[in-house]
Amino acid sequence: MMSTIPFDDDHPHEECGVYGIFGHNDAAAHTALGLHALQHRGQEAAGIVSCDGDHFHNHRGLGHVADNFGSETVIRELTGHMAVGHVRYSTAGGTVLRNVQPLFADFEFGGLAIAHNGNLTNAVTLRRQLVRRGCLFQSTSDTEVIIHLIAISLYSTVEDRVIDALRQVEGAYSLVALTKDSVIGVRDSMGIRPLVIGRLDNAHILTSETCALDIIGAEFVRDVEPGEIVVLDAQGLRSIKPFAKAPRRFCIFEYIYFARPDSLMEGISVYDVRKRIGAELARESAVDADVVIPVPDSGVPAALGYAAEAGIPFELGIIRNHYVGRTFIEPSDHIRHLGVKLKHNANTAQIAGRRVILVDDSIVRGTTSTKIVEMVRQAGAREVHMRISSPPTTHSCFYGIDTPEREKLLAARYDVQGMADLIGVDSLAFISIDGLYRAVGEERRDARRPQFCDACFTGDYPIPLTDHNDGQAKRELSVLTEGK
Ligand code: AMP
View (tube, rainbow, N blue to C red):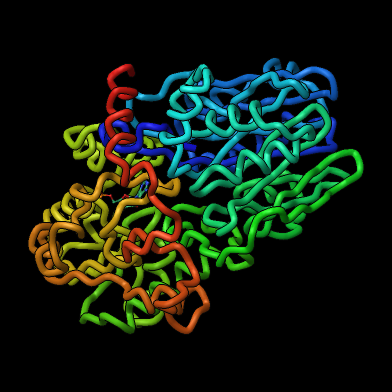
């Protein structure tokens, strides 16, 4: 889910995690635990809507899952045997309670709550049409567009209305929705964002990552297929495939950075992929050095893979303070600098006098790397070589991963040598796109039919960027933004 103001990059985009469960008396408590396991996907706000077959109950709030759902009283009020939940990752001041999910509305057929991970690329265009038809929007969230499309659909069943609505939207989405007698999960037809099915006794679960199944001891059943709708109700689990088949394009950045390393994505261990990227990197861009040091935590698995392949000792030469949020969530460049200092400290004894290979997952603006390199040099490193476990991030993501606008991406402005000079390293190398594809089990990237969405590295956007390419939509966005 993200705001319909994606081009105002003082209000950066959002990433999210979703969870839905049907058939368990402790539905809300399980949802809270699942959301806690998905906390890395969204730290700004959390919400749960439950239903007992008649009544819906909801609780939504800014902050972490534990801040909002840590108390038994809150959970006790979320009664019912089904629930859906959401964690939201956003950054700036644009976050207001009315944008916090799951969104809920009363329809002709009853109540419906929706939680969304992803981003719609024609939300502003659709919103404009809906407003002209008299729809009154309560939020600036693209997810609300789906709500209105469901409301005005001429079909009678909820499922048909959802299908009708989704036929009109473009973009990436994994959704979970709650009606008074079902939980519905949907994945867009390219399967860009993840969604998995789990089982706990007689209950079924739909969630973004398998780590949210592990936390409650649920069994992983399978991934929801691209374009599949899964309905969980009193009859069990039903699958519908109403959308035209499209080539699968799962987001490769989930493997590199976004997902938790203990999750399986499309049946592949995220941790294993990260280690294999490290090994590929060691083969592709070897350098003589004394120690391999990860930028924690995101660089750790790739650094382990690099060190093992290169036969160079791995050390924790940088220690992370876990009690600050991700640097990325700081709104301004000024604060962002401070964030790096708050978050990382050099473990000098592991660095002084050594030739260091630093491993991190990505360079976005370059702020983190610049600060880390400066810190490692101050700790007495003789040489600093940086290895990055993704290709250069040259393009913004419009499908639900938070990236700044293109002009702010370091790799869109400089070549590798230019970036190395700016960051202040003796050498800099990124994994090649084919090396990355090998790490996820492909022989190479098939340029005619890429197996993943890798638009942030290639500019090959599999879904049209309708709003982005439409001047009027952009102008409407800025008006929306002024109102914030
Ligand atoms: P930067 O300082 O802007 O170059 O950011 C790079 C750091 O941000 C990397 O070390 C990543 O671990 C982290 N990062 C990369 N992409 C994202 C993202 N989409 N959301 C949050 N953090 C990210």
